[in-house]
Length: 418
Image (cartoon, rainbow, N blue to C red):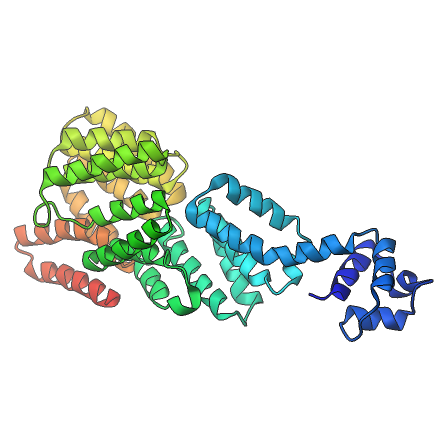
């Protein structure tokens, strides 16, 4: 932006005509050409115009030049999860009057979208993404890659929510990023998470390891720990690692979370430990970790809904609560899910049928509603669990053609990813 554009901005803001501004200083034609960048004016005349507009022109020019630095600092603060710095820079950028008229407008909008993702404000983030795609048809190479990154992050962040996008979409978006143009290896972490949601464990581990190297190199200790958590999540305690060793690794990471004050990471580990004990049929320990995780989780979040569900499921499978208490939990979860997530709404309903031992209705609802919904959203991780239940049921009932159809659907979902 030229100095003339700064003058034009404040002139229009104050509702002053070009003729009025130029009175006693210079003619309207000079003002018009100066504002459009066709002529230059002497420092003395610029000072007089600025004085008439009651602005410090040097301060305004400095503010303009600081935009790029503030944007870079803001992006870095979000990557490093420095909350105070994130909010401070956001406020400074919002107070800059020129930012949306500058060449950095698209970058600012994209980082605002990333900020909303950081705050779990998904609708606002989606609105920003749509606005950028509509209003900024010609982005720089860096901005194109940043847009891909943010769209991929949005898909991951809204996975299993009412705004759910396919996890395969996140993989496809993030794989398009050109690192030579983008120069931000942090995206490896989000690509690893996308592969994790798609149940592609080898790829998830590979990219999580790359992310870990980047986070260690940049002293990003919290995200380095998150990358380690993601790597551990890819291990199968039946084949890849001793179960006790896996648990010990998770407990060591919990200790690191306490040292770093990384509460959200600690909650994620507690939940993951619950899942590991649940898969082993150790329901007492699973319930203990699930309960600690969901009690520390914001009740308005999708994570609370998910963690409450798995706590209730483990209580039912382990016969650790009375039937009426389990049904109370299911009812509470169903009410929350109705507002937030259709998939979990149906899963809570399925769990209720299981608790009441209405097995014929259970398998009918599983076959006619739950599994088709999972297939429609290409949700491989859910299919791994509920598709398997349906497949085994068909085999037990000697419904082999139906079992084959379930198996075909599972293989097709993996082909979509690859």
